Length: 256
Ligand code: ADP
Ligand code: MG
Image 1: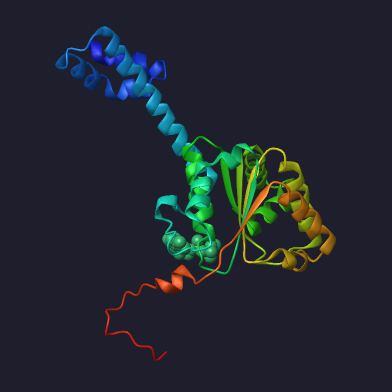
Image 2: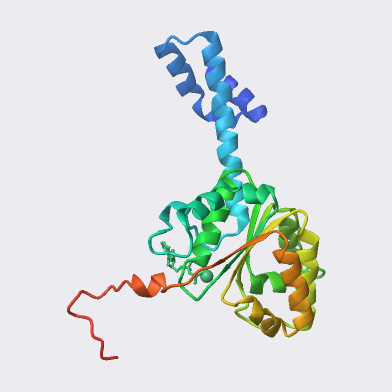
């Protein structure tokens, strides 16, 4: 076996994956640029650190369970008048996750609630936070079945260890008394350890209705609201305003 092959095997056995993959490139660069021994070793170490950092970040993003990716940079503030530039900057800085603040984004369909929630979650993953995304419906299903279903248990374990939990579409479907109680228990459990972002089409006064229990709704909102910001997004649906059509202009018909 030649020397490079031996070194590659040794790098693999030490889990130096970047060094293993780029060994020849690293050596070639050192020769070309006449690097000092110190710089050569530095290149190996920094390449390895970057590789691990990128890998861990990709893992966090994958495990967060986003249904699709949305980015904060694509969120058009001039379209969304309910959030000021300053508020958006503060949200993007993510210090509210360290302070375990919650965020409730409410408003009608299409105004960007999910975009903003996923954008913040994605950015949090980039910055090293453990994030979980779930819809309310899927969360309730997991809470109900975690004792008997391994996948639900795995998801709930991850949620309980997350720094940020995004619960999308709260209030779209009514939930039973048992489900409401399980949700209350989870919110209580997480209140000192996990930031929760909720997106909802319901105002606070309507929570009693979809939870079917005014006392429970008050208790849940009490827990959620203690350290919390509420942003009511008003205005038109971005989807409707930016409707895309695959038919050519002039060929479309409004006669349907
Ligand atoms: P909601 O969750 O409030 O129903 P979404 O976040 O799903 O709305 O937004 C609907 C679509 O419109 C998505 O494709 C989203 O990326 C886009 N969108 C909404 N608001 C904005 C915005 N302010 N800037 C850019 N895209 C937006
Ligand atoms: Mg949505």
